[in-house]
Length: 159
Image (cartoon, rainbow, N blue to C red; front, side, top):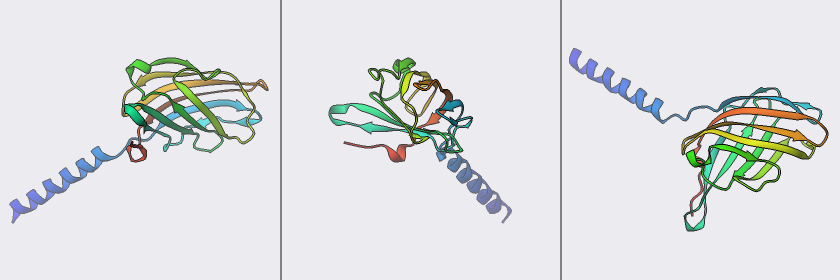
């Protein structure tokens, strides 16, 4: 009886360990500055993520969703390629002519026009991207963020 109790305990422990391995890590990072009259100071929302956009003919792009925990800043971006070591580096946000082909600020509503900015990947693989971005706006406001964001495979698109 003691032996079967040990076996059940071992099986339960292994099951819990396997569940921990399957859990997606939370996003982390921090933003600071102003977008127009709105302060975006604060932690990145834990559910910020990126996922694959599997296009035709084998091309892979990326949807990136970033927001602060307070909801003061929400950004939707589309990258023309799946993040990898080859995409590590700094990419312009103005004009959008490189890795980043869409950069939309949905919060705060009525954000001033982006006059300058950069998007930097410091680490990138198929599971996690890390980096920062800086934004300068037409009204003189500025904001920047650092991020480490996991891939949410449940949102990946397929051909």
